[in-house]
Structure formats: C-alpha cells, structure tokens
Image 1 (cartoon, rainbow, N blue to C red):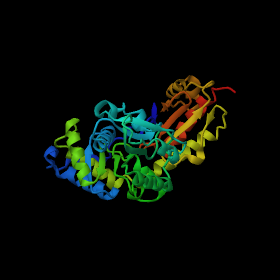
Image 2 (image 1 turned 90 degrees about the vertical axis):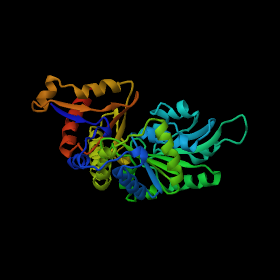
Image 3 (image 1 turned 60 degrees about the horizontal axis):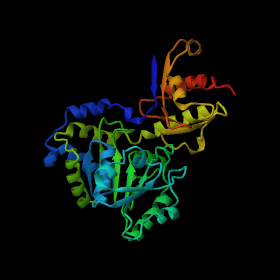
Amino acid sequence: MIDIDFRSDTLTKPTDAMRQAMANAVVGDDVYQEDPTVKELEQKSAKMIGMEAALFVPSGVMSNLIAVLTHCNTRGCEMITGNKSHMFLYEQTGVCQFGGVSINTVHNLPDGTFDLEEMQHHIRSRDLHEPTTSLICVENTHNKCGGRVLPLSWLDELVEIGKKCNLPLHMDGARIYNASIYLGVPAKRIVQGFSSVSICLSKGLGAPVGSLLHGSREFIERARRLRKALGGGMRQCGVIAAAGIVALDSMIERLAEDHANGVALAKGIAALNHPYFKVDVKNMQTNILVFNVEPSKVNTSEFCAKLQENTDDQLTALGGKGVCVKAVPFGASLIRFVVNHHITPEMIELALQKITLVVNEYKI
C-alpha cells in the first residue's frame, strides 16, 4: 500500500539533521531561562522576524492564546478577527474560556482579507455598555481560504488603521514563511508594524514540536508569565528547540517545492473538467489546496473515504498498486489537501491517478 497523506503539514517528521541536532543539544532549565539552545532559537527567530524578542511555546494555539491574553489583560476586552480565522474556528475560543475576552468577527473575503471599512465599524466606542476593543488579529497564510497570502498593501493599510485607533495588531503567522516565499520578501517585511506574531515550526518547516511568539521585550516578559500559568514551562526543552534551529536554517527556501507540488495537484484536478469539482488554479498560492464540490452531488466525507479505499477496478487501473490518498473534508462543500516536504512530484502524479478514478465515479 502506498500512503499519500495530504491531511496537514503538521504530519511532517523531523529530518535526519534535526534528529542529530536534538541528540547533541546542550540543555538547561528553560523556566529559569538557562537553556542555551532555547535562547539561541528565540534570538534567531526574533532577528528573522524583526522583533526584539521571542518566546518558545509548545504549540501555535498556546502562542495565539498567550498573545491575546497579554494584549487584552483585563476581562471585558474584545478582539476583532476574521470569521474564517483559525483563532476563531479552531482554537476552542480559548481567549473567552481563560481570559474573558470576547471575539468580534468580520466577514473574511476569499483572499483571507476583510473589508477594512467594515472592520472599523466593529471597533467599539467607549460606551460603558460595550466591551473594549483591544486587539485586531489576522491570519497569514490563511488556512480556511486555501493558503492565501495577505497582500502587503492591505497589511500596510491595516497597520495605519491600528496606529490611528491606537490598537495593537497580532498576526497568526503559523505559515508566515510560506507567505514569505510566495511574496519573495523577508518575513520581517510582512509583519512590519505588527505588535506581535506567532510562527509555527512543526508545519511546513518540519520540526516535531513548537511555535514562537514574537514581540517587544516587555511584551515577551509578560507573555512568559502567562506561559508558566498555562503549563507551558518545558524545562530542558533545548532537545526540541534544536530541531527548530535546523528548521529555520534549512527548511524555509525549500517551501517553494511544496508550493510547486500544490500547483501541480490543483492543475491536475482542474484538468479533469468535472462540473462537480471546482478548483481555482489561478489563486493557488502556497501549499494548501481547498476546492469546492457540488454538495448536492458529492458528500465530502464520503469522497475522502473513497480516496483511501482500493476497489478491484482501481487496483487493476493502477497496475496492482494499492494507493491510499488522505485528505480532509472541510465542510459540506470543501475539501482540503495540504502538501508538505514528504510529498514528492511522483506522489502527486500517483495521487492524481487515484483522484481521477474516484472523481470519475461521479456520473454527470
């Protein structure tokens, strides 16, 4: 059986170089800020992002949660974000659970942005009946919108609004380096004017664990206290920080390969020209392909299940090879494929053969 797993880039496994670095890492107690490998990772990442300091945390969800609770440090605060953002849809609204922070959503446009004039209408007055608008959050690249990269001109305009309204900006930049590669600019340019940014090491960059929260030194010191309260003090975590250093040193430029494989996958599905499956190849920008199906004709969960099965006819068509393609149903009308560094061009071609067989089962 040949397994081709497109469910997420979180499925990446550490490279040999990462494993070697982990085995040889010099460690100390990071809660006492005595782990030299963690310090090296944080300093390296902060410099790359163009901010004063960084904090190593177990996950992107914790990083975003700490960011919001640091910015919104009194109960009754409110953050503004897109209605399709990861922070709103997929993080259990932890900011509400743990910080008493409400979430005010703005309609996300297909490219991951939102209408900035509409957003400004969501900023609260100082009416004592209302929560206090304290933070604006964006996601880049945008997962639910198919890995789209937020335009620099839009980000610059948002920064100016933040300054005018005296509101800090946080970027959920889990895949910020995918955006950097697509735009051909350093990551620090993308986050220019933002107060904080979270990046993930364990997605396309391939490290086994960890994210980094960035901001001013004063912001990170306050964030460090919250990390401890949330149980994120990891003691001798240089053994995993070492993999993060390798990721930042050697895994960023190669993200272009994932993008190219993603485009090839999108073009292959679009070439089937099946009316029940619509792929926007023109806007396929990074490693995430989210395409539409006709929900009255295609059940997304059933379709994904079919991709993992192997019928006798499929085995014959594939020369006796069993092929299991894994993807994620993304609602009633969307299916998501995510490319990562384990996916080769040869696997893309084989996956397209399997996808073609399954798509052709849906008679027009």
